[in-house]
Image 1 (cartoon, chains in turn red, brown):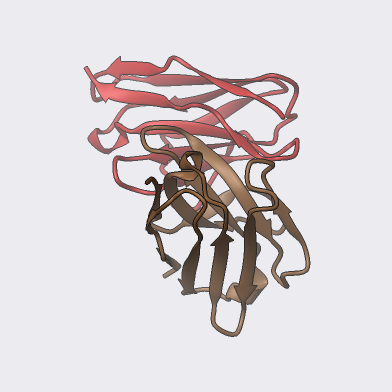
Image 2 (cartoon, rainbow over the protein chains, first blue to last red):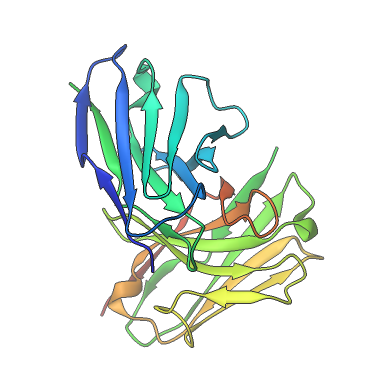
Length: 107
Length: 120
């Protein structure tokens, strides 16, 4: 099973700042990686799939990059509603698996 | 509007059983593959089970294999998870999740979740 390691565990930033979240896979997942956002008490929301494709309705300030084992989610300018936990997920190797999450909190 | 509404969670003793349901609306349920994903309190996400659109193909996580059974009723637009021999480590919020595209294993719509607590 592929292990996804997300860093940092917590990211403290101010609104308007740029957020860079990392996801590292224990072996190559090609470009088969997604990102989800989860707010307290809510279900996860799909943001990015296949490394860099934004899901329907996702603002352009969210972007994804990477390949193989190293991936990045970038939020170009944090809005108040972006403070949440973010998870990466791979589908390249069975079973699908998620990272442990990065919490983006208000500084 | 796509909606997924889970129900059936609750408190159950170790070794007990529960049946979760997920009612789907706002899309052609019979055309989509569906999954269950769970989240233990304060923890991350864990994929649990997959069922194809017709119900002919089913997969389980090793952690639940032999104890959980996924099924669907396309006539009722409903997804189910029968959970037997429950353990404390099965305590979690259980989400039903729709696949973005067939065999994509990305999840584009999720329900609000139902909490299962296994405790004596």
